[in-house]
Structures are given as C-alpha cells and as structure tokens.
Image (cartoon, rainbow, N blue to C red):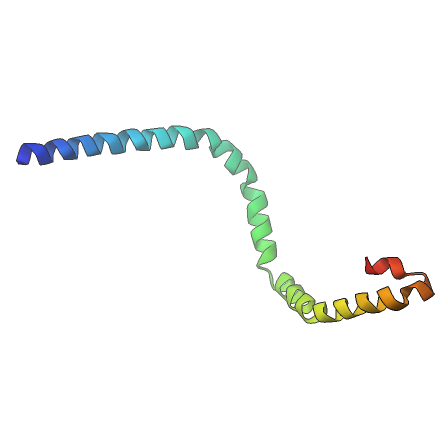
Length: 88
C-alpha cells in the first residue's frame, strides 16, 4: 500500500513539474507582449475609475431618455429646419 501511494505521489509530482515547466515556457513567450501593453492598460484603468469619468457616465445616464425624445422630434420636424439627417 505504501509503495502504491509513493508511486502515485512521485508520478503526480513529476506530472505537476512537467505541466508547470510547459506553462512557464509557453507563457514566457508572451511575457514581452503583455508587458508592452501594461502601460496602456493601466492608463485605461485609471481613466475609467476617475471621478470625472464616473461623473460623465452619470450625466449620460440622466440625459439618455431625453436624447431619444430629441431624436424622435428631429425625425418628425427636422426636415423643416434642414437638420432631419441628425436623427439617423
């Protein structure tokens, strides 16, 4: 029984070691590409979590119902002013 458990643990450990080595080799090839984009991703994250961005998103949520109403009005009466194309 002990030799079976020892064999299992040895085999499992070797398999885990080989899988880790394979993952390290594969991910190592993409590390440079990932680090190339790191600055851009951090910049986007900082922008989308800034108070100014959150405030503008709240403003857009408040204004969106009115934008649909305005588009409907432009469809109906925009041709009189020559700006009906704005509703499309």
